[in-house]
Every structure is written in C-alpha cells, then in structure tokens.
Amino acid sequence: KKRKVAVFVAFVGAGYSGMQHNPGCKTIEGELGSAMNKAGAISDENAGDFSKVQWNRAARTDKGVSAAGNVVSLKMMIAFPDTVERINSHLPEQIRVLGFTRVTNSFDARKHCDRRRYEYILPAFITIDGAAAAAAAEAAGSRQCRFSAEQQARLNEVLGAFEGTHSFHNYTVRVPASDPAAKRYILSFKCAGTMNLEGQQWVRMVVVGQSFMLHQIRKLVGTAVAVMRGVATPDAITLALDPARVVVTPMAPELGLFLDECVFESYNDRWGNDREACVRLAAFQDQVDAFKRERIYPHIASYDAKNGTNAAWL
Image (tube, rainbow, N blue to C red; front, side):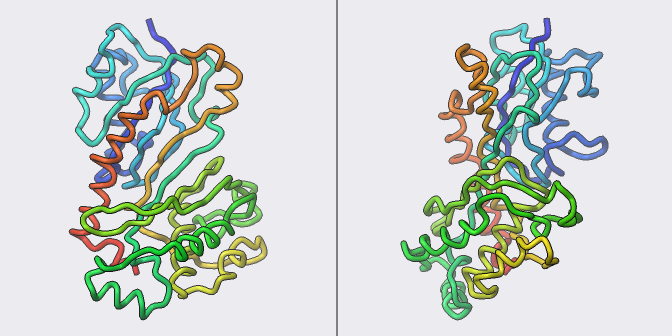
C-alpha cells in the first residue's frame, strides 16, 4: 500500500542540471525516481510519471547547487523496513536519502514549506575590502588571509541591508519590478563565522527566506562582496532594491551555494502533537552534519582549489 511521505534528501549538485525532473536532462529527481522504482518504492506503472505519485519538491535547486536537506513529498510504497537503504543502494554516492516521515495525505512539500535556509561559503580573501589588500592576499597564495572580527561585523551590516520585504527584481533574471513575484521576504542574512578547508579560511553566510528566485542568492552574495571589496558603493544594495531602478548586479559562482534546510513550521504547529507526523530535518541531524562535512564542504573547496572558480570570478 502507498503512503504519503516526506523524504529528506542530501546531494552534491555537480554534474546535474538541477533538482527538478526534466526529460532529457540529468537531474537529481531523475536519479531519485529511478532508484525508488528499482527499490520497489515506486511501482513500474508509476515510474517516470511523477504526477501519479503526487510528487512535489520543497525547493527547486538550480544547476550545480547542492543540498543538505531538501524534501520531496510523494505517495510511496513502504513494504520493507530497510526502504531507505534499498533506495540508497541504487543511487550514486553524491545523492543520499537521509530518511522519511509519514505525513497527512494533503501534505505538499512545496506549498507547506514556510521558509528555506541556504548557506553560501567563499574563501576569506574574496571578502577583503580594498583592491590592493585583496590583491596582496591573492598574490600570497590567499592562504595568509585572515577574516577579522571587524570584517565579520562589516559583512553582517552589508548583508543586513537585504533583510525584510523588498523588490528583488535586480537580483534575479527576467522579472520586472511590476511583477508581484519580485517582492520577497528575507527573514535573516548573517555571516556565520569561518571554517578551514584545504588549508584556507572560508567565510560562511546563511540566508533564511520564504522563497527565492532564480540566481537570487548568488546575486545577493555577489553584490555584498562588491561592496565589501570597495568595488561598489555602500548604497549599491539599497539602490538595486528600488523598484524604480534597473541595475545590473554581479553574480557569485554557483559552487559555494547549498540548500541547508526546508522548514515546515505551520504544518508542524497544526499536526505536531502527533510526533510521528512532524517534518523536521533535526530527526536526521547527524547524517546531515556528516554529509556536509564529508561531501559538500570538501567538494566546494577541492573544486575551487583545482579550478580557481572564485579567483576567476573576481
């Protein structure tokens, strides 16, 4: 018998043209659907047609973007106690099903997701203000660069300008200010400190919002970096949020971005007294942390070391 479930998925997005199933393209959902079918979680007659199993994803990550906690809702056959292991045995190492939760029949991962949290990491030398200081850090192999408490405070000030409800038409593509879709709400945007990867210091930025448009976070980060480096004036952010202005904003590479968590607060408030029905990534926190530590962060750092993605972007 099929049951409605919320499936938690983590993946490294490299080599895939995004999360969303797209015939003829290599996608995360394509791999998931195929693995679920092979594992007996989706029947042969429903394989390949997501509408038959009421498939919905909480976040549609773009090409090359990773995720530590995306959620897919669907009607799945749970005939075996080891369903998760069976599905994972048919998936490439860079995609993992963390687990699943039984949900109400009306649950829809996209509609019931109140907010999404993304993380963006980039080498510390990129955020150093002053072209000369940054150039010196880069010339020194960028390894000697250190991100100070003052720089963190300044970055928080810059990122804070994006918080609240604004018209983000200049921070996406092909959405005019007149389109209601351009209005978005950002709950918080903060620098979450630094971490060391591949012998280099990396800066972590965490943004929480209801929903995001195509390239939006990459353009927010790109503009914040431009302001930090003194390439753009401090008022560049507010000018680009003005509905009356059309501004070209810089876009940071896709490499450093990943979806951290999808939050289902109002659904959980309504159904949460039934502990089983709560849709919370925290239930799989150890696996999530391990996936970030062993897969997502090392991929970003090693790819950047090999290809100089961030330095080339500058």
